[in-house]
Each structure stands twice: as C-alpha cells, then as structure tokens.
Amino acid sequence: MESIKKFEEHFADYGKGTNGFGHLGYRILTCIFAGIMEMGMFFPIDIVIEKNKESMFFPLMMGVLSSVAVFCEISPYVVQREEGEGISIYKKLSYVPVEKRQIRKGLMQKLFRYIGISMGFAVVQQVGMTLIVCPQFVWQNLLYAVLVAGVLPVVVGMIQILIRT
Image (cartoon, rainbow, N blue to C red; front, side, top):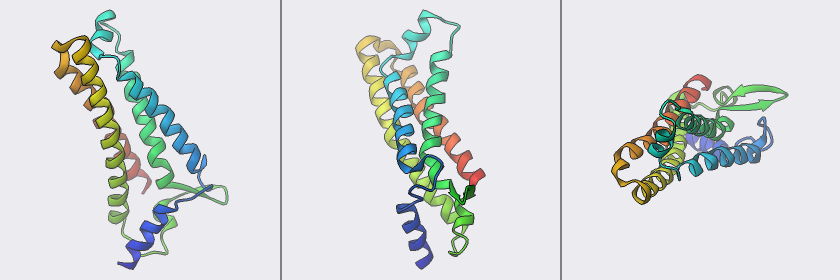
C-alpha cells in the first residue's frame, strides 16, 4: 500500500521542469491542439464532405490534432529527463516496488479521464451544430465525433503507454 502512495505522490508532482517542454509546455501544447480540434467540431462533417466529396482532409486533420493532443497530455507521465537523457517512468520508479500493471492502470485512468472530457465536449458541439444546420445527419456526425475525439486518441494513448512503460 505504501508503494502505491509513493507512486501517486510522484504523479501528483511529476517532473516539474524535468520534461522536454516542462509541465507548463505540455499543458499549453495540449490546449492548443485540443482547442483547434474542438473548434473543428463546430462544423458538421457532412457539409464539409459534400463540398468536396473526394477530400477526407478535414476529418483526417481533426484525428491527427486529437492524437497529438493526447500525446502531449500523456507524454510527461511516461518519459522524463534526468541528466539530459530520457528515462521511462517505470525505470525512474524502480526504487519503489510498483508493478508495471499498477503504473499502466494509473496512466490509463488519466488517459480515460482526459478522453472522456474531450469527447464529451466534441459530441455536444458536433451534435448541437448538426441539429441546427442539417438534422438529417445526426448519427453520422455523432459517429464522427466519437471516432475522432474518442476512439483514435484512446488508441494512440494506449500505444504510447504500452510502449513507454
């Protein structure tokens, strides 16, 4: 039980100034990329695709932005810098008897909390704007919002957590 408390204390005070950009830098990058993606949710996707039926640039770009935002959100937790070189969180916590499973569980909780909030906003925005502009496409746009703001970032975050821990 003591090891889990030390692990959670480390997460509460993770590497201030020891990461690549520092805690504030990653927060700013997360806000920028997630904000651009959330602003994109104000445009119903079916209208964007109808204008140019062969272009999937907009949905692809929204997926990339949400994936980069998740990468910036999780990155400080999984890689930290000590003496100029990157070190994984598991190696940094090797002095504390914590299993990888516990570390991954803590990281997954942080990932799902972030994704839940982000996806909630995206779904509300996308469905709201779809109901205002083109109500016949509600289900397609709901699926788009869940895929872009939920499924794709979860996959990227899980891959990052599994590779880096």
